[in-house]
Image 1: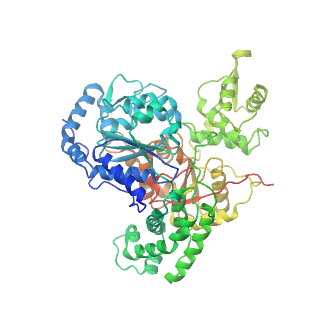
Image 2: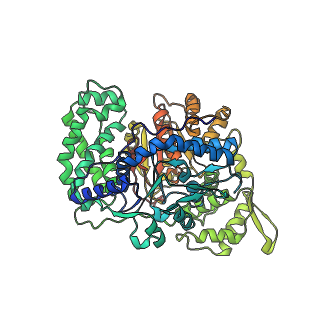
Image 3: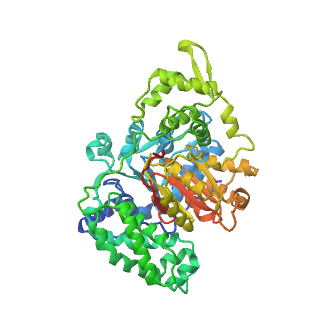
Length: 632
């Protein structure tokens, strides 16, 4: 019997804005025309210029088109055909895995700059069972999105080996794709791919550029100042929505009738305040240069609102807010004449986590915390830790590790003698092992550290090691302490700015007031976290269930939160998820948003390079500046 087909969303979510700049208006009108006919586009523009807002506007226009209505009318028949195809070719479990993963009529996004290179092909196209170690049959994003949009941001940063397969998926005549290890193609005739990049056109692979759809260029905010004022009210309202002192805010704005605290930012009183402040501050904002475009602007207003202490009178609150606004403006924008906007680019020294992030962390802490390799800097130790973690259960040659180090320009010394010396030091401590002789020498990670990580009494939420010699960051620690009142915080900074070290210092400083629980995400994503939590609190596997597996896990763990995370006095426990920018699966991003909404008895801090747009309305951004870890 064919099950009920997944439904189209009742009210498609739209998170765009209405432009005021004449040139931007024309761009939006052009995009609407392409959307009505389901034609793909590629958006060029600097980081933070609003490329995803434009993609979401495309989606809004699509949902109002005749094409979208035709998709809805034909969906039941289409679903029945799909079910029959997968029922004929797959086991019932693998068929149901595909059916449960389907998303219909929705907007989905993925970032090519943060997707882990080794997983990019699998995430986009899917893979069959056993094509690599312990792999289970998994459909890809291109396969499960039906009658909807996939937005691929920073498409120019996708791994090169993905491009040929993507070309076939973008074929306008007969678009199709295939899972890794499969012999069956699946059609993509009802999926629209929108792409974006901050790279110039000449850096995009030519055959990809000509197949990917019409090119649209959107300028940075400094070149369209009329659009500033339209964004500001929303950012102020979002900031007020991040605050958790609901009664103080209701009293401050004299809000009498509101159904729930979540509706406070939508009230006429708050919107009136936001519009008034936007009008007052717009000219000042327009006069400055904004290298981060919308991201920086959002960061300034949300940070200023969240860190303004509740004051009895609205006028006094406004004065304090404006004072905070100018502080954050200095940090996130430049004086006039500060130069042109520079597009952000992925750091070539970016070190991706392995499938075992807790083992990454344990190896790093063991080596750096005890100064076992004093001639290695933190970047080298980080690369070595993740390489050893990835190799656990197998062996490698000395030249393999040398080649790994050579991938990172920041490492200048990759001589055979130097790296052999490091390995010998770890062998003497029984962290590493060795077999064979001469050219046949092979190295491997022993069970010493993995056994500590995965023992029954291991603390899965242990904080990283703190180093007293680190340079003080007391001012930022005080600021972040104010942000805790919002209960949902995203610490944002580029690679190399010391995000993990900073949160370690913060936890060390504030541990008298809060209990902190730290977890580093890896390529296994949230399901690794859920499995470890289940093992830790000894709740069994629920077995086969209908619906979204991650949503089921979040609901199953919810009653056990007080067992897992303990209050300190009246203060809620703080859960910290690090390396969020490495989460490539949009389903994981949705699940993190779900955790933020459902696990209300904890404070949740995310740490990453660039906040995903899915988190804008939930998390308050807290940027940190670059620093030197070692005291002078």
